[in-house]
Length: 464
View 1: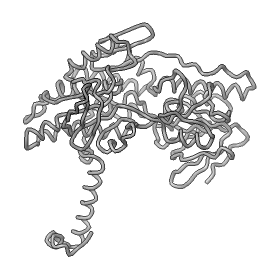
View 2: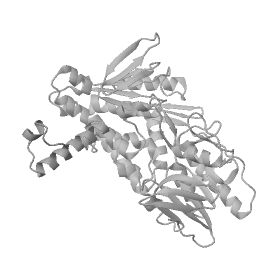
View 3: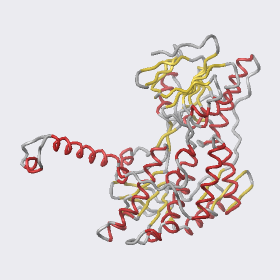
View 4: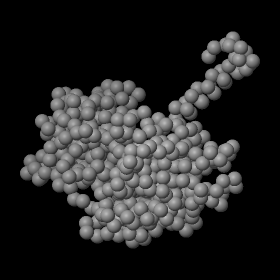
């Protein structure tokens, strides 16, 4: 099914409702163009705060406003819920899947499909870990972390209790550091008074990384301060400790001598790496372009796909020299490509190649534990926390979400409690185990409705 054209106006199709796609759509909405924004979810996700949903600080709605709500006052922006699965560059059509196949024609295409998890060639680890790229991931993480304390409360043996109270976080970048700090706060400061059979302060929160330091891109004094802050919150940091095995019962790490050490843990969180969205490879194949080892599309300095000046690719799915794969470059690239498109339509000179402006890096470990690096400025402690809060509020979409986030942060600090404590029972176990349990439950219920008792099933007289 093809989307009908809207007159003779220039048609811009944007694939992806993340930072780059939303910023490009906003900037282009002031021009005489028709914009179609396609995403597989109906919301814009503020990923830098996703870990706060996963640890019960914020609610999902506060960091994920609906795309239609964002553009309700932009009549030339049309939002379409669909999964893009290919591109026809000759016909200038985007292929997608909703409840049926769709084709969306374009005059200019912007692909901002983001990134997904990378397990460095060990994709089988995905089944045994929790990751953080979507709201579903965050909700599952919250259920598994909070549920681990509940399972420890009911454990029959000390070994089982210890396994539930061990949390291994792989990856000591900003996401891993922030997650470890929040889990440490839960275990050692917020939950001790709420359980009767266990001492939550005995929980082990381990932050592991193959690199020799935490927060690799930060200055050395900030790395050391972050490590000290984590230790104060009860987090054990082990660097130069590559993970060699992950299974349902825990992980195995190596040390400098080549020895391997087993850690029994029911909860393993993956924050170690990302790779480009599969759409990067599909677009590269369609355009005859190249990708790097992380699957990122190699684009021209003006963010166009080589040989196709009508196609732009931005954000985590592309590779540009000196540009990191974080939110700020995607925002800047979104604005930039809108400027290029506007200049083309106006017949004005083409803007100079994209130039990334580094606005600094930050990581919050706890309430008064944070580090910030802005140019030559180095901040730690509460001043860094304030800067972190202001910057993140500035980029949250919607004043309502900003006020709610401030109120929730203040409540968390003053009351030392968290309101978002919902646990999904299915999420207490790995997803494939949950599916097996649900399947068995469905079979049992069908048998009961058919009047088949357990004694007949044991004799094997009835098959599923």
